[in-house]
Length: 495
Image 1 (cartoon, rainbow, N blue to C red):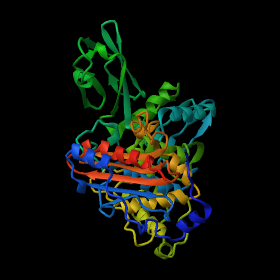
Image 2: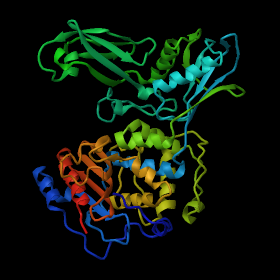
Image 3: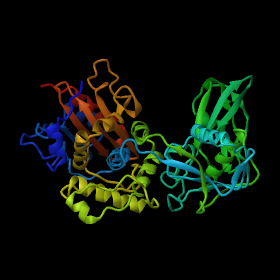
């Protein structure tokens, strides 16, 4: 069951009607299931900010509770970044990783350097790197008689401690963005019990990294199997295990952020090149692509729509930051064009990406799109993995209403996780009588002291509603049932 905004209404929404003008009818108080769940979590009502409003602004609002309160949205901020990308870049936008040379290819050998210039591709995973290398080898590049030079200059980023945010440097969600981001700078460790020991395999192949290939088995319950391994990540060229692996765990995988992220791309490029049968006589190093080089191959990314689906359904932080930095590469909007509402920049990144440029582009886009009455969000890195990012439920509802009327709006909606079915919202709507299952497209967010949810819900009354709920409170981790109840209550609304 879906209800779409009609053409006339869409035109109204896109040409200036205040998107969340409050209905003259007084919205309902917090539903009993929501209030009761908050009480069980020992969270006061004033720690919740919530909105339930129809996509059609002519219909009555249902809930409006502290909607103008500025909150930390956690990963729900990804909705702002991904919708701006849909609007400014278009769903078919792609990033291009380019392979150049200053030499020539002859009899299976490239005599000269191979330059790899990153463009900010958010999902340059190993399989796609293997495809690029296969294409180069098909062009006769079997041996590189020179260096492989990796050009990261499309982004200009300050040095960053991967454990700075929460002290969890080895968590993949803390991976830092990079113009030449490879495989999210992560290593996948696989443990397989076999004849008294666990065999350890890993991917991708990282040049110069040695990983213990076996670890003794332990008896007893699986429990904290990662802790039981007593893994050592203190050396850039080795991963060791000083403990045991519980046999009861069976086969398990452990994704970890590589302990020396600055060298990850070089290790991965060389490791994958050699694993594909390629030969390199020089070294892999960072550097700039010089003028006058010859283009050998272009590796295009997945389209933006596929990228934002990963971001919104699985809340991938580094992919969101790659998109955010790409928006900062767009030419700046002239302030007169912003205030007069003229079209934004062409979708052609043309300058170095920096976080401060992204923030300015987002601020200008927001003003051009929503005007000056709705304050722009306070953005940091665009992913929500931040203690400083802020927005109001009112502002987010404006964005979601605008997105519903956008020519590509339904593609944006479908990028969200679906209650009871896909992504981070799959856990919602599991009851047999759930009205939300399959009828709610949502983005969730969680940080310490923060939990949030936002998106669209098709209700039994035939309306599509915007549902937004945030809890900023020390007990926020216990507030998830209250937000789930808000979604279920909305889906069950009847005429």
